[in-house]
Length: 138
Ligand SMILES: [Zn+2]
Picture 1 (cartoon, rainbow, N blue to C red):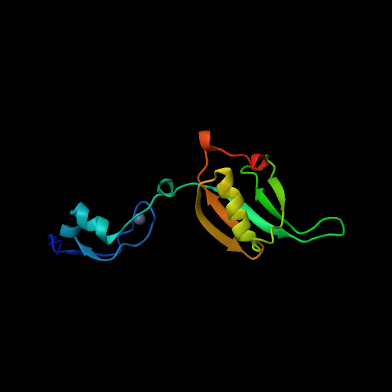
Picture 2: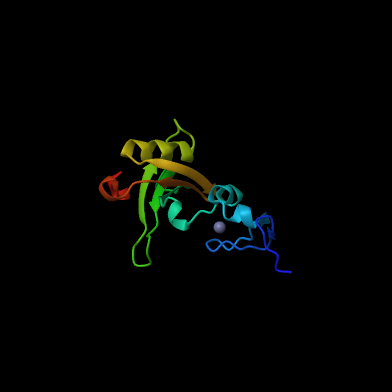
């Protein structure tokens, strides 16, 4: 009893940071930082880049207006309003995502990732501080 050695298996060890159960390993391995970092890679939320979220979606034509696309950035806090800018739908692109991508790139946005859901395209952009571009300035 209580005969712990470097080869004693540790099981059910929970990561202090992410609360995931780490696979079984020995005490010897547990003391080996390099081994442990290969066994369990743990990201902290601060390690994940924080980007601005810009949406683009199609706006149906009306009796008064042709088809448009809207480029939108929602307010980041409850007190701030969404910023929106509308553009004529460009039939040369014929595609909201491609047109919005072109508009954002021309405006100087650093587009880091894209996504979509059932009603819009999403662009994650890395424009903060001195690189901040207002939607109204596009
Ligand atoms: Zn972890």
